[in-house]
Image 1: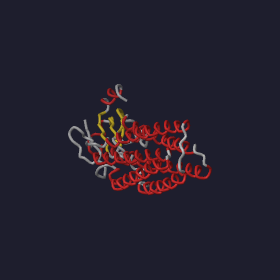
Image 2 (image 1 turned 60 degrees about the vertical axis):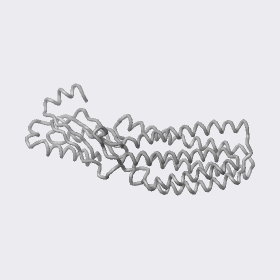
Image 3 (image 1 turned 120 degrees about the horizontal axis):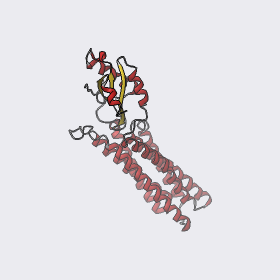
Image 4 (image 1 turned 30 degrees about the horizontal axis):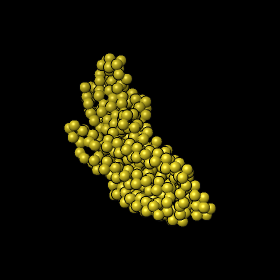
Length: 307
């Protein structure tokens, strides 16, 4: 039977690799925010600032994980790891989501404790530190503004910085309320808001990462449409064992057994394979495909067992 593989991705490494320097800057910014917020929280007694500091620390750790995953992903494939270490990026995204979930639980628990045992906090200092954190986070968002749609790993880093920026806004509002009204409960309320901001992006990141790990079909590749396009090619009479999955962000893979009329193979396998793979690559942007050609009759027996 004929086998062929599509061309490897046009660029070396992963889509995330091009943003390594920006991620390094983002790590530096997140680490600086964390240090400033911890000092500010200790001086002011603010749980909201401490929660935002924990969030910023998670950002720094998460982006560092992303950097480590990108570095590993650049390593060449081996005979035992034929796709290299690309999947490490997805495991990094899962770990990011777990870290964010842990921060949420801690923030919620600490905030509930503050309602029963109130602490006097300094609203002016909270406000000033939070404004500085917001400005730094906006710089981080600018650095990753065009990266979020390139890779699940980079999306995780972007969402972490975005969530931290929104957390800074919550702390600013809480600080203003305390400064203007003296209502100390605004601090734990702001903490809870920070925790709640973490939930939706944690869920989305974990859902998408698990989608890849479960080797589900890529969101943007409709296998029914792939089948229809292949069946529309001259000489193709059947398609079975059609599978699609994602190795890492931006690297979809597809395999298929294509049953062809006997006369269609008279001109050789090469031309037909090229045409079929061009169909998959041009219409569905799948650069790596493996297509097995089978003569009519063989495919019917196989198709009764595999679909």
